[in-house]
Image 1 (cartoon, rainbow, N blue to C red):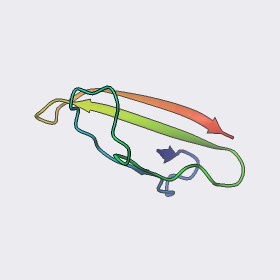
Image 2 (image 1 turned 90 degrees about the vertical axis):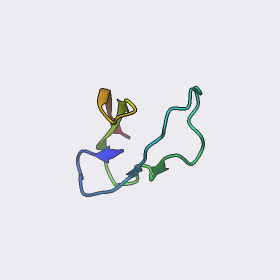
Image 3 (image 1 turned 45 degrees about the horizontal axis):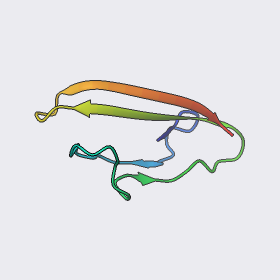
Length: 66
């Protein structure tokens, strides 16, 4: 997660290998939720990669919180 309004704030992230299951195991991603005063825009990005590491596609979602 990225805080668009405060890009130096680290909120975590991670990587997960696709094993054919619909669920991502608990603890796969490190995450610190939004906690700054006032409203901020937060962004989540996910990139799918093939076995060689080549990007197959990326999706991004942005939301102002709260």
